[in-house]
Length: 349
Image (cartoon, rainbow, N blue to C red; front, side, top):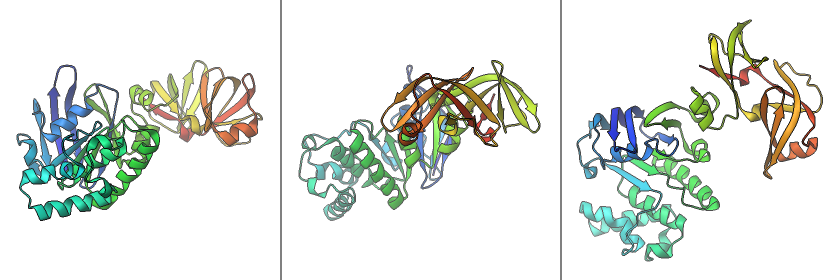
């Protein structure tokens, strides 16, 4: 549905560089990355707000690179809603349809249908400033969807909402996508949105796409130190890798970590998700090839889970559920045993 080839747009402080990306019809693609990575510029160039300095954009097989926004059949929703304050909700949703020249009957029907789907029918005669943030964002989404876009662009649509409203609207976006099967490109900083919404996720850095894949793949198998750090791989080690009986042994400051990854030699990075590490006050009876013994030097309890720092010669971070933490009655200074499978160790150059 959406194909981008070697797209570059330089706005000075923000740049999108040499981006090539294909999104299938009906796919929900999420883009993440640090502030200034070029995420919003990418969306706005797809929408036609900017003309690319280089490259081309195809939507539904048609080259739209030089077409004005109104001819691209793309709609964009921003985090700050951008509703017309002098119009009521009905008029806000209908604005694009009237500009397109739709009849009053057709406009009224479409507005009622989308308002009912997004549960804002009872708000149609109110002004935007009388609505909550969640209601205003539903209105902005309704105003976009009523235009029947072939691609929906969402620029951090939930970031301005409180946690409870954000969770509710995230579920509604998932329901909306399942119902309409519209192609979506969604920019966010929130990893929960990635895992709950995305078919695939792309990570941008310095104007470029650094990695793309299914959320589980990107978060568990980062392809660079930047990706590992950005997605929160807390156990990230640098060491020398050598072959070991069909596996790999990574020497990290005199300590050996074993991975199933083969064929990578020399200086590498090894990452282990904190939730993949088991902790015990007694030695493990396990077939896992990685075993360490160390002292707890810090515990951060957030009420839902506990983040435990262990000095085992090299530093490890372990995540325990609240129940598991309470049952073990761990405290700083305790000696513990750690173990994790070789398959849990991701190695990259």
